[in-house]
Amino acid sequence: MIRLLLVAAVVLSLTWVAALAAAPASLRSPAAAVRAVAAAPYVIGSRVCHQAAERSFSLAGAPLPVCARCTGLYAGVPFGILAGLALRRPGTSPRPRAWRLLAWAALPTALSVLVERAGVAPVPGWVRAVLGAVLSGTAAFVIAHQVRAEEHAGR
Image: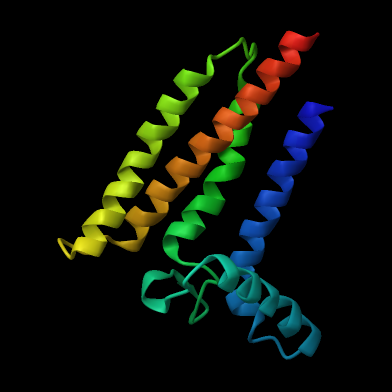
């Protein structure tokens, strides 16, 4: 059952990433219904992201519904879950080790935010996206691995 839920999470996260990528081109559709559906990721994205066009990737001449860092955060999740599922024997990884792994994964993203906010140097969108993907992928991996380890221990 846990595997099924984790696979469903992968499918849902990939669907969301696909919706983010399809939204800019879909906004140009002649069909009003397609444009209305394409607007949904922008509305949802506005609740969780600043949506600054200069910090977002563009497709079809329009920015994606979320910034480059958020795009990376969303894109990393399915890969982290799949990595957590790929482990043959989840074992029992102690939680303190998981927290250290998450802290190390968060450090580069935190540093990039500090560098940007301090005005030291601009951080390119692709760097923000990659660092976001590393962070969310690691978090998803830790969660998937921990859930599987607890399921395995309960058998």
